[in-house]
Image (cartoon, rainbow, N blue to C red; front, side, top):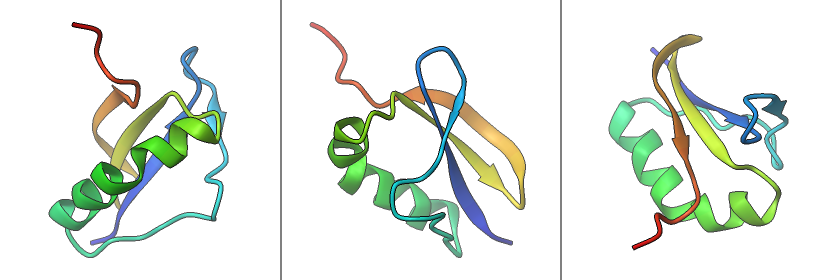
Length: 69
């Protein structure tokens, strides 16, 4: 199993990963990575992410922008 993220603009259009596609051996590794890099991704113009396992959607799209309180 390979876990990856698909990156999108707010309208759902796909955005290329800024540093190429990262692959992770577990869902936890993928989620930890996005938790550490989401600010950089937003800075690269990415609005949301979809988690994929072997190319199949697990969940998302998940906004990378902080929620407003």
